[in-house]
Length: 308
Image 1: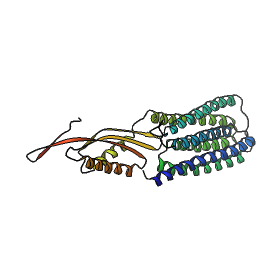
Image 2: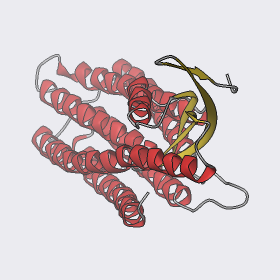
Image 3: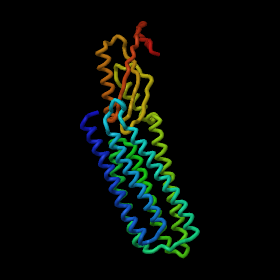
Image 4: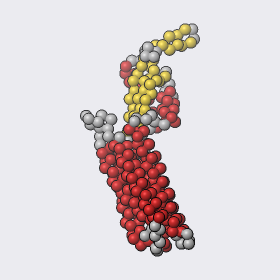
C-alpha cells in the first residue's frame, strides 16, 4: 500500500468521525429545542436517537483513532478490530434507546398529550434531514475509499435517522387530525422498532468481523482471477481471507515451476502481490510458494505437486 494512500485514508477517517460528532451535537441541540416547543413524543424519540448518535460517534472517533495505530509487538496485525468493537458499542446504545422509547410510547398511548407548535417541529425536522443527508453523502465517499466498518455502521445508523425523521414529520402532521393524538406515540414506537433493526444489522457485521469471516464471495473470486492471470502461476490453494478494520488480509499458496530459482519465485510472488494490492488498495498479502514438478510426456505436460 502506498504511503500517500494510507495517509489520505487516515485523514478521511478522522474527518468523517469529526463530521459525525459535530452533526450529532447540532441535531441534539435543534431537536431539544423542538421538543421543548412541541412536546411531541416522536420528536423526543428522534432526540433520544440523536443523543445515542453523539455517544456512538464519540466511541467511533476513539475507536478509529486507536485502529489507525500501527502494528506493534503485541498486535502484529494492527488494531483494526477496534472498529468492530465500536460497532458493537453502537448496537448496544441503539438497542437500549429503542427499548426505552418503545416503553415510553406504550405509556403515552394510555395517556395522550396534545402536540403544540407543529409547524416549528416540522421545520426543524426538515433541517435535520438535510443535515443528515450531507453527512451520509460524505460518509459514502469515505467508505468507498477506506472500507471502514465503523464508518459503515455509523452511516447505516444515520440513514435510519433520515427514515425516523420522515416518520416524525408524518406524526406531527397527523396530530392535526381529530384522532391524531394517538399517532404521535404510535409513530414513536415504529421508530423504536426501526432503531432495533438498525442495531441488529450493525451488531451482525461487527460480530462477523470479530469472528474473522471470509471476504465476500465476489471479492474472493476476483482475487483468484487476479492470481491466475499471471502467466507463470500454475495454480493456487488454501486461499484464506478476512477483514481487519479497513485492511483486507489475504493469504494463499502459489503453485510454481520447481525449476525456478528462489529469486525468480520471489519476484513472481511480488508481482502477484502488487496485482492484488492494485485492486484491493488496503490489502495485507501473504504468499507461500509451492514447487510443482513438470514432467513432459510427448507433447503433454503433467504437474506433480508434492504439497497436495
